[in-house]
Amino acid sequence: MALPRPLSAYCALADRISTWTGWLTAVLIVPMVLSLVWEVFARYLFTAPTVWAYDLTYMLYGSFFMLGSAYTLKRDGHIRTDTFYAGWSVRRQGWTDAVCYLVFFFPGLIALLWVGWEFFAKSFGQGERVVTSPWMPIVYPFKFVIPLAAALLLVQGLAQFIRAVHAGMTGERPDAATRAPGEAV
Image (cartoon, rainbow, N blue to C red; front, side, top):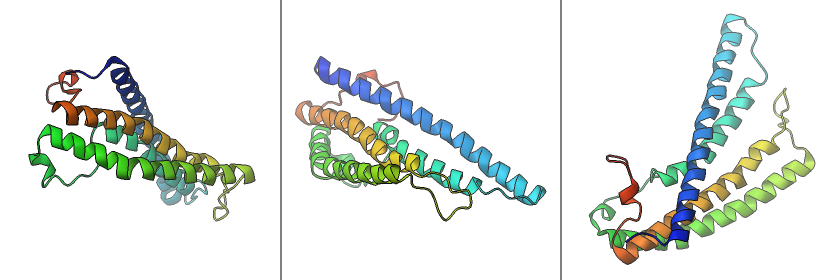
């Protein structure tokens, strides 16, 4: 049994958003690696270390770590202990996932979104800079990634919750028919 059309459309949209942000996140690896390579050459070949490479590297790494989390959720790639779960029926797995989303996932992410937004807004309002760096870059774009990642996770999490409820009710995974052979859940 397939998901109702509006729910299916929402899940497909959430998946597209997560895939797009996952791709963008993967692209962020390139400037991070280039800045590290430049720093190594500048420091050891030219004896002229940069003042910006370290700051850029940790901001980009932190960003792609957080922004890639919705794509990882879409691909069911987050850590799970499958000792008991793997042997359960699809229906039991679905209801377990649905309850865990309601009790743990959504409340935690709503709190992260709320606090992360306040964290960013204060930083933006003050024009905060990294004072421990001689480069003194602005830090609020990096802090904006926190509420953005929480929002992206909430969007994908709602799609996963819908799928979990469907699996709990029907005993079938709603997207199994659309998955390519050999593709992970």
